[in-house]
Amino acid sequence: MALIDDDRFIRIRRTSLDFDAVGAARAAERNCRDEGGAADAGRALEALKNKSKADWDRLTPGEKAIVITQGALITAGAAAGVASDPAARKAALDALDGQEIPVPYTDGVLKIVPKTKDPGGLIRIDIIRLLGRK
Image (spheres, rainbow, N blue to C red):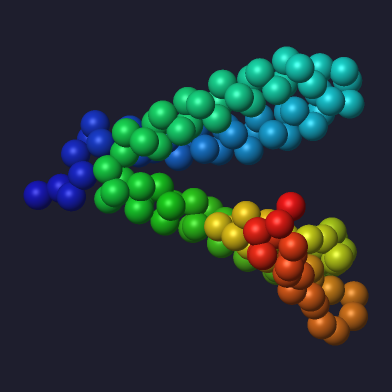
């Protein structure tokens, strides 16, 4: 007996492709911004976000788990590829150096700042936002 029938698998796969499309739309938006087409790219990005959210909301918890697992596997494969090539690894680490990375679900209160060129790193805490003052 199959765990997921073909129709559900196709729906899961289509949803994961839609999430991949959101990343492609963000890249397209950056490219269009350079060419003066930010408004068109913004509308396209908003349409993709809305469709992806609607598709995500229709998935069952088990289907969501499969999509997240698939995304994690793809990300791990990409990270392994970058980590295995010294030049790509150096470029990735140089790009990360000093960049503020917001911690999910903290509304920007916590940010991690990796230091790749020298030992250490930072964890930034926005005390003003933490205390609820803006």
